[in-house]
Length: 350
Image (tube, rainbow, N blue to C red; front, side, top):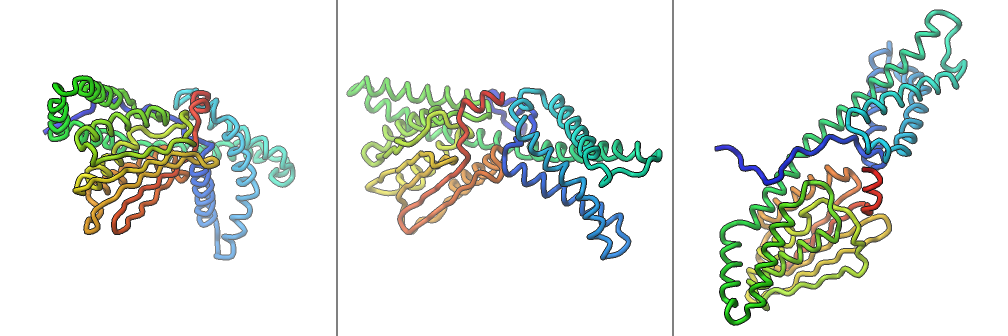
């Protein structure tokens, strides 16, 4: 049977890595020095010679690496406006130019006596630098392609969770139950359903603002409160929430669904879901707390949602995003931390 597709599920555009991300910078440093070590091992004639070879390579490699990272950091916004292949070409030319410039500035440290090789050497290093940069760009491209299905899969599962038959059946029954006694409330519930599906279908897979994510979550919780009545109460703590902060779409809703279905619904007396969204320094924090049955464990739904969120955070923010899960006898708490990226800065990069 062919696999179901999502409406508006277009392939994610190829983009250069974010050269201002600490995760990307760390990976570049480790990979480049790893390649230098491999080259030293190939050229060395003894164990003692490895250190000397690595030192000789590093005298040119480290200044080129540091200068390239600084220039890429400074021009990251400009590179983001180019197509992937245009940006890649610019990066390769930048690395080659930096290599040539540092070679010339190094003077006798790198230069050979006036022979034919003295003209060949700088261009050889420039080509090697560009080749290394091309390998790194290929690595990041393959890595992004490997993570891309996780975003589409997460969207598919989130949408399926919202349109599953018993969810729609319960919502429609809740509306029918009050349509005569409270027609205005029934009309508001139908509007919540329409807005929920419209907003979910509108997400293109890129980052969305916190304002949009909270609006979608409120529509979802309004429907659940209609279904569960007084058994479900929600406390929003958004006093310190920057509405322009960017995050991956459909981040809150799957966690809230887990909190309702696996935390509140099994409790006869119901309970309260606490949602804390705030900024602390250069980080955005998302905390969701819900009670649960003491004998309950971590459901498959919880693990599935957290697995998808982990992969999506890794795709968007690499090592700069993380989350923790705390599970007690009668409570469950998820705490997500990701970089604070204001919407204005994102628009500048585009």
